[in-house]
Image 1 (spheres, helix red, strand yellow):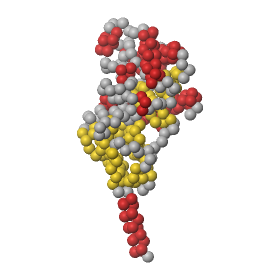
Image 2 (tube, helix red, strand yellow):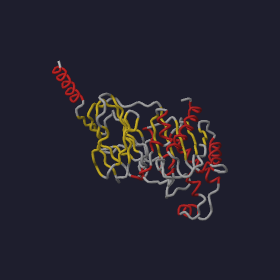
Image 3 (tube, one colour):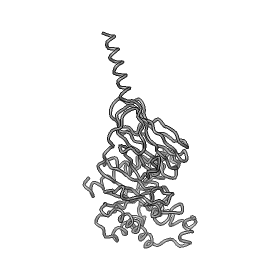
Length: 355
């Protein structure tokens, strides 16, 4: 009897190995779901923006991916069945990476999530090597697009030392309020965000209006907006403007304004122009013009008022203002504070959309 059990066990093991044989999946396979603004190049998909993700459903026990990282600075979350299984840091150049192994035999959802923003470099994805079989791609209930700065990127959200370091080691876009909110609503998400960016001034020589429509921020190629139409757009900008429009010694201030700070009318008109540009791309979307939750929203700040005036002047019933509560702590939002922002935004979205 024991011999028979051993033979049967060996049979099932061999059968499982055969069922889950190695299967090479090219980047352009129609069953792969790409989340994010991801251009398709000749031989690979190009991931640059925060939250750019490659997602599959498969039946099997292990998966590897062939990736080429531009600078060797990007981090990725490996998400299995809705939970972060591990974090990997890519090395520079083309290499095959083990994503997951020794999974229980069965159906799984696997996500390769870019947690670092585009200035840490691009990653080219060539395909998967599965110990298993690819299934139909995931389906999402809603579509949300974000335009934001370091808060939306999740900059320094994992720095628990209080030093508020903006290094790639401490940036986790997966914990950003934007991504937490999208996951809550089972939404396909796009995240056009950059630490330090503003509406009228940034810490560098371009603003959101210069890149909002680009496939990759540091290239002139325009994104094809027909590829993705969100139901909801969330804009969370002005934090950097609130600092830099007062800093007369900053290089970009001198370049743009000389010695005279911009007027409220100038700031409001530029914000309206950005919102109108986005509205032109998505005529039917609901748009939330948000701000927070750093010191641009502290008591006495004029910046919430600028957004309220800008929105009021647009006369669009589907554009709303939402000011996050001021977190009243130093530095960028922590993971916990990002969650609080998400909870706040989720409530507002429910109220305005009925989701």
